[in-house]
Length: 260
Ligand code: PGA
Image (cartoon, rainbow, N blue to C red; front, side, top):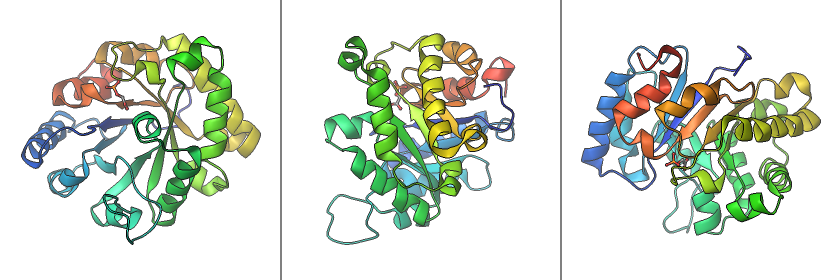
Protein backbone atom coordinates (compact mmCIF):
# COMPACT_ATOMS: atom_id res chain seq x y z
CA UNK A 1 0.00 0.00 0.00
CA UNK A 2 2.01 2.97 -1.19
CA UNK A 3 -0.65 5.44 -2.16
CA UNK A 4 -1.83 7.63 0.67
CA UNK A 5 -5.02 8.39 -1.27
CA UNK A 6 -6.24 4.94 -0.27
CA UNK A 7 -7.01 4.54 3.40
CA UNK A 8 -6.44 0.89 4.31
CA UNK A 9 -9.60 -1.05 5.05
CA UNK A 10 -9.59 -4.19 7.15
CA UNK A 11 -12.69 -6.29 7.53
CA UNK A 12 -13.54 -9.10 9.91
CA UNK A 13 -15.81 -11.70 8.36
CA UNK A 14 -17.23 -13.70 11.25
CA UNK A 15 -19.08 -16.03 8.85
CA UNK A 16 -21.57 -18.37 10.61
CA UNK A 17 -19.87 -18.05 13.99
CA UNK A 18 -21.03 -16.57 17.28
CA UNK A 19 -24.36 -16.52 19.03
CA UNK A 20 -25.71 -13.10 19.97
CA UNK A 21 -24.13 -13.34 23.42
CA UNK A 22 -20.78 -14.43 22.01
CA UNK A 23 -20.92 -11.79 19.28
CA UNK A 24 -21.64 -9.04 21.79
CA UNK A 25 -18.65 -10.11 23.81
CA UNK A 26 -16.33 -10.32 20.77
CA UNK A 27 -17.54 -6.90 19.58
CA UNK A 28 -16.82 -5.40 22.98
CA UNK A 29 -13.33 -6.89 23.10
CA UNK A 30 -12.65 -5.81 19.52
CA UNK A 31 -13.81 -2.28 20.25
CA UNK A 32 -11.54 -2.03 23.28
CA UNK A 33 -8.58 -3.54 21.47
CA UNK A 34 -8.95 -1.07 18.60
CA UNK A 35 -9.64 2.09 20.47
CA UNK A 36 -6.70 4.00 18.99
CA UNK A 37 -6.38 2.65 15.49
CA UNK A 38 -9.56 3.55 13.75
CA UNK A 39 -8.46 6.97 12.48
CA UNK A 40 -5.69 5.81 10.23
CA UNK A 41 -7.33 2.56 9.22
CA UNK A 42 -10.92 1.81 8.40
CA UNK A 43 -12.25 -1.23 10.24
CA UNK A 44 -15.43 -3.15 9.48
CA UNK A 45 -16.84 -6.17 11.27
CA UNK A 46 -19.37 -8.44 9.60
CA UNK A 47 -21.19 -10.62 12.13
CA UNK A 48 -23.91 -13.11 11.18
CA UNK A 49 -27.33 -11.52 10.54
CA UNK A 50 -28.80 -12.53 13.89
CA UNK A 51 -26.09 -10.63 15.77
CA UNK A 52 -26.04 -7.43 13.68
CA UNK A 53 -28.36 -5.53 16.01
CA UNK A 54 -26.47 -6.50 19.18
CA UNK A 55 -23.05 -5.82 17.64
CA UNK A 56 -24.30 -2.50 16.24
CA UNK A 57 -25.33 -1.47 19.77
CA UNK A 58 -21.90 -2.36 21.16
CA UNK A 59 -20.09 -0.50 18.38
CA UNK A 60 -22.09 2.70 18.82
CA UNK A 61 -19.71 5.54 19.58
CA UNK A 62 -16.73 3.67 18.12
CA UNK A 63 -15.29 4.18 14.66
CA UNK A 64 -15.67 0.54 13.69
CA UNK A 65 -18.18 0.06 10.89
CA UNK A 66 -20.76 -2.68 10.74
CA UNK A 67 -21.20 -4.84 7.65
CA UNK A 68 -23.45 -7.63 6.41
CA UNK A 69 -22.11 -10.83 4.87
CA UNK A 70 -24.65 -11.05 2.05
CA UNK A 71 -27.93 -9.53 0.90
CA UNK A 72 -30.70 -9.92 -1.62
CA UNK A 73 -31.12 -7.37 -4.40
CA UNK A 74 -34.85 -6.87 -3.88
CA UNK A 75 -36.02 -4.46 -1.20
CA UNK A 76 -38.62 -6.84 0.19
CA UNK A 77 -40.88 -9.70 -0.83
CA UNK A 78 -41.28 -13.45 -0.80
CA UNK A 79 -37.61 -14.40 -0.49
CA UNK A 80 -37.51 -16.73 2.50
CA UNK A 81 -34.21 -16.67 4.33
CA UNK A 82 -32.94 -13.50 2.68
CA UNK A 83 -32.21 -10.00 3.95
CA UNK A 84 -32.35 -6.80 1.90
CA UNK A 85 -30.05 -3.81 1.60
CA UNK A 86 -32.50 -1.41 3.31
CA UNK A 87 -32.84 -3.89 6.18
CA UNK A 88 -29.07 -3.97 6.57
CA UNK A 89 -29.01 -0.20 6.44
CA UNK A 90 -31.69 -0.07 9.13
CA UNK A 91 -29.50 -2.27 11.33
CA UNK A 92 -26.70 0.26 11.02
CA UNK A 93 -24.60 -1.42 8.34
CA UNK A 94 -22.35 0.70 6.19
CA UNK A 95 -20.82 -2.17 4.21
CA UNK A 96 -21.86 -5.59 2.94
CA UNK A 97 -19.77 -8.42 1.56
CA UNK A 98 -21.09 -9.78 -1.74
CA UNK A 99 -19.90 -12.67 -3.87
CA UNK A 100 -17.84 -14.28 -1.13
CA UNK A 101 -16.35 -17.49 -2.50
CA UNK A 102 -18.46 -19.50 -0.06
CA UNK A 103 -21.57 -17.89 -1.59
CA UNK A 104 -20.26 -18.47 -5.10
CA UNK A 105 -19.15 -22.06 -4.59
CA UNK A 106 -21.38 -23.46 -1.84
CA UNK A 107 -24.55 -21.65 -2.87
CA UNK A 108 -23.97 -21.32 -6.60
CA UNK A 109 -24.11 -17.53 -6.87
CA UNK A 110 -23.17 -16.29 -10.33
CA UNK A 111 -21.57 -12.93 -11.14
CA UNK A 112 -24.94 -11.64 -12.30
CA UNK A 113 -26.38 -11.97 -8.78
CA UNK A 114 -23.30 -10.43 -7.21
CA UNK A 115 -23.75 -7.51 -9.57
CA UNK A 116 -27.43 -7.06 -8.72
CA UNK A 117 -26.57 -7.13 -5.02
CA UNK A 118 -23.83 -4.54 -5.49
CA UNK A 119 -26.29 -2.24 -7.28
CA UNK A 120 -28.94 -2.73 -4.58
CA UNK A 121 -26.42 -1.84 -1.90
CA UNK A 122 -25.38 1.34 -3.68
CA UNK A 123 -29.00 2.30 -4.17
CA UNK A 124 -29.52 2.14 -0.41
CA UNK A 125 -26.35 3.89 0.61
CA UNK A 126 -24.23 0.88 1.53
CA UNK A 127 -20.83 0.06 0.11
CA UNK A 128 -20.31 -3.41 -1.32
CA UNK A 129 -17.17 -5.41 -0.62
CA UNK A 130 -17.08 -7.46 -3.82
CA UNK A 131 -15.14 -10.70 -3.49
CA UNK A 132 -13.41 -12.42 -6.34
CA UNK A 133 -10.80 -15.15 -6.58
CA UNK A 134 -9.77 -18.30 -8.37
CA UNK A 135 -9.96 -21.91 -7.17
CA UNK A 136 -6.89 -24.10 -6.87
CA UNK A 137 -7.85 -25.92 -10.04
CA UNK A 138 -8.11 -22.64 -11.93
CA UNK A 139 -4.76 -21.44 -10.60
CA UNK A 140 -3.07 -24.71 -11.52
CA UNK A 141 -4.52 -24.66 -14.99
CA UNK A 142 -3.19 -21.12 -15.50
CA UNK A 143 -6.57 -19.42 -15.81
CA UNK A 144 -6.39 -17.18 -12.71
CA UNK A 145 -6.35 -13.95 -14.69
CA UNK A 146 -9.21 -14.97 -16.99
CA UNK A 147 -11.31 -15.98 -13.98
CA UNK A 148 -10.56 -12.80 -12.08
CA UNK A 149 -11.24 -10.62 -15.13
CA UNK A 150 -14.56 -12.38 -15.75
CA UNK A 151 -15.62 -12.00 -12.12
CA UNK A 152 -14.72 -8.30 -12.00
CA UNK A 153 -16.41 -7.38 -15.25
CA UNK A 154 -19.44 -9.54 -14.46
CA UNK A 155 -19.83 -8.41 -10.86
CA UNK A 156 -19.33 -4.71 -11.52
CA UNK A 157 -21.29 -4.31 -14.74
CA UNK A 158 -22.77 -0.80 -15.06
CA UNK A 159 -21.36 0.33 -11.72
CA UNK A 160 -20.82 4.08 -12.17
CA UNK A 161 -17.57 5.86 -11.36
CA UNK A 162 -19.13 7.43 -8.30
CA UNK A 163 -20.33 4.03 -7.07
CA UNK A 164 -17.02 2.41 -7.89
CA UNK A 165 -15.17 4.86 -5.68
CA UNK A 166 -17.23 3.56 -2.76
CA UNK A 167 -16.86 -0.09 -3.75
CA UNK A 168 -14.17 -2.25 -2.16
CA UNK A 169 -12.80 -5.27 -4.00
CA UNK A 170 -11.55 -8.26 -2.03
CA UNK A 171 -9.22 -10.61 -3.86
CA UNK A 172 -9.50 -13.93 -2.06
CA UNK A 173 -7.94 -16.92 -3.76
CA UNK A 174 -10.30 -19.77 -2.84
CA UNK A 175 -7.38 -22.12 -2.10
CA UNK A 176 -6.16 -19.72 0.60
CA UNK A 177 -9.45 -19.30 2.46
CA UNK A 178 -9.54 -21.08 5.79
CA UNK A 179 -6.70 -23.36 4.71
CA UNK A 180 -3.79 -21.70 6.47
CA UNK A 181 -2.19 -21.29 3.03
CA UNK A 182 -1.69 -17.58 2.30
CA UNK A 183 -0.75 -16.40 -1.14
CA UNK A 184 2.79 -15.03 -0.96
CA UNK A 185 2.93 -11.25 -1.03
CA UNK A 186 4.30 -11.45 -4.59
CA UNK A 187 1.54 -13.80 -5.75
CA UNK A 188 -1.09 -11.55 -4.22
CA UNK A 189 0.48 -8.36 -5.60
CA UNK A 190 0.58 -9.82 -9.11
CA UNK A 191 -3.18 -10.36 -9.08
CA UNK A 192 -3.90 -7.06 -7.32
CA UNK A 193 -1.90 -5.19 -9.99
CA UNK A 194 -3.81 -7.10 -12.66
CA UNK A 195 -7.11 -6.09 -11.02
CA UNK A 196 -6.00 -2.46 -10.86
CA UNK A 197 -5.16 -2.58 -14.56
CA UNK A 198 -8.66 -3.78 -15.36
CA UNK A 199 -10.02 -0.90 -13.27
CA UNK A 200 -7.76 1.51 -15.18
CA UNK A 201 -9.19 0.20 -18.48
CA UNK A 202 -12.77 0.64 -17.31
CA UNK A 203 -12.63 3.71 -15.05
CA UNK A 204 -9.38 5.46 -15.99
CA UNK A 205 -6.17 5.86 -14.04
CA UNK A 206 -7.23 8.55 -11.60
CA UNK A 207 -10.29 6.63 -10.41
CA UNK A 208 -8.54 3.25 -10.38
CA UNK A 209 -5.82 4.60 -8.11
CA UNK A 210 -8.47 5.48 -5.54
CA UNK A 211 -10.20 2.08 -5.41
CA UNK A 212 -9.28 -0.13 -2.49
CA UNK A 213 -8.42 -3.77 -3.09
CA UNK A 214 -8.24 -6.03 -0.05
CA UNK A 215 -6.45 -9.34 0.13
CA UNK A 216 -8.16 -12.23 1.89
CA UNK A 217 -7.26 -15.83 2.64
CA UNK A 218 -5.69 -17.05 5.90
CA UNK A 219 -4.44 -13.57 6.82
CA UNK A 220 -2.61 -13.68 10.14
CA UNK A 221 -0.85 -10.98 12.16
CA UNK A 222 2.52 -12.35 10.94
CA UNK A 223 1.66 -12.06 7.26
CA UNK A 224 0.15 -8.59 7.38
CA UNK A 225 3.22 -6.34 7.24
CA UNK A 226 4.57 -7.94 4.09
CA UNK A 227 1.19 -8.07 2.42
CA UNK A 228 0.53 -4.42 3.18
CA UNK A 229 3.97 -3.44 1.86
CA UNK A 230 2.77 -4.38 -1.63
CA UNK A 231 1.80 -1.35 -3.72
CA UNK A 232 -1.65 -2.59 -4.70
CA UNK A 233 -2.78 -4.24 -1.46
CA UNK A 234 -4.98 -1.84 0.48
CA UNK A 235 -6.20 -3.94 3.36
CA UNK A 236 -7.46 -7.36 4.25
CA UNK A 237 -10.63 -9.36 4.63
CA UNK A 238 -10.05 -11.62 7.59
CA UNK A 239 -12.03 -14.71 8.52
CA UNK A 240 -10.66 -17.02 11.20
CA UNK A 241 -8.27 -14.50 12.75
CA UNK A 242 -11.10 -11.99 13.28
CA UNK A 243 -12.83 -14.35 15.70
CA UNK A 244 -10.30 -13.46 18.41
CA UNK A 245 -10.12 -9.76 19.29
CA UNK A 246 -6.40 -9.98 20.04
CA UNK A 247 -5.37 -11.44 16.68
CA UNK A 248 -7.71 -9.12 14.77
CA UNK A 249 -6.30 -6.12 16.65
CA UNK A 250 -2.76 -7.21 15.77
CA UNK A 251 -3.74 -7.45 12.11
CA UNK A 252 -5.36 -4.01 12.17
CA UNK A 253 -2.36 -2.43 13.88
CA UNK A 254 0.13 -4.07 11.51
CA UNK A 255 1.92 -0.75 10.96
CA UNK A 256 2.77 -0.25 14.62
CA UNK A 257 3.93 -3.76 15.34
CA UNK A 258 0.62 -4.79 16.86
CA UNK A 259 0.33 -1.81 19.22
CA UNK A 260 -2.94 0.06 18.85
P1 PGA B 1 -9.88 -16.85 6.40
O1 PGA B 1 -11.19 -16.32 5.64
O2 PGA B 1 -9.14 -15.62 6.89
O3 PGA B 1 -10.39 -17.70 7.52
O4 PGA B 1 -9.09 -17.60 5.39
C1 PGA B 1 -11.15 -15.19 4.82
C2 PGA B 1 -12.49 -14.96 4.17
O5 PGA B 1 -13.17 -15.95 3.85
O6 PGA B 1 -12.91 -13.82 3.95
